[in-house]
Length: 349
Image (cartoon, rainbow, N blue to C red; front, side):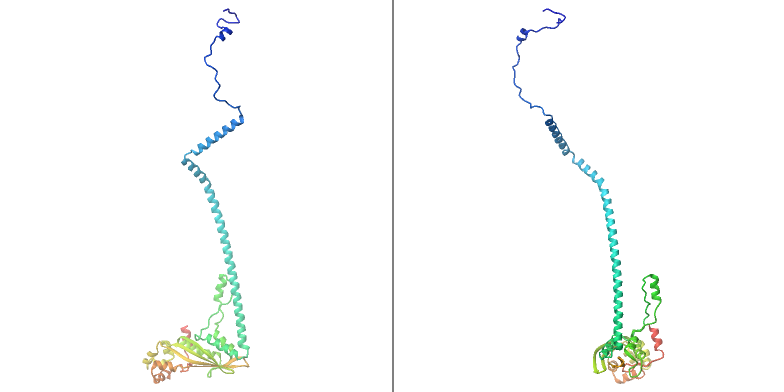
């Protein structure tokens, strides 16, 4: 084998004979697996699907404790803000509700004040109309009205005059103070009624004038307790006359014995003991005589039967005679005036 600079001594040239003489060790076999043509898009999609599946698998395989901790951390961050917003909303809602409530209260008070003023005005108008009817209407029907009102006002005997406060439109503290300290003279409703519904010289057969009639009521109430006059019925007994059937109840007290029956304290203490704290129920009548010209009452005749209940308590006519012999009140319920009557009344009330 010749050599040259083109063929170094360490190299061998293989001719066809040498190559042809080499025996193949394995036969050719077809590949078991074939691959389709490479597609970049398909490969990328498969890769992302695979990675996504792996990510989900990893997330699902997280520890439940860690998952709960993550949720709590998120909730902890959001919860304070939510509470602050809710608290502010509730405060605003409460403020609006309170403002509406106060507005409704003010409106209700204003409506109530207006209603009360309206009712007072109506009462005054009706009272004026009633007084006009009693004063000017010359009809027989008016005597019924006067008699009914008479027993309504005197059903508990005499009523002491009251101090009437001066009316004031303002409700300020100073106005209210002045309202109760600036008073008009005492107002006696009973006396005003007698003067308006009866003539100036009205009489009970003994005394004249409305003041004299009222004085008998005053003494009856002054010297007895629990005076109660009940109207049983009204009867027309003439064209201009009306009769009322009544029941008068009074209680005898130590004050009664001292002033009405003063002679029983020393001389007849046994009779005084029988009368003390006893309740007298006396039947009686009141006659009203009407004047069509003036449209008022001209005569009021009152009588009670004190004899029957006294006889029941004392047991004999002799004892009854002894009790009323020097008494301040007659068996018909009429009082005689005394010097200390007014002083005793003022001291009692």
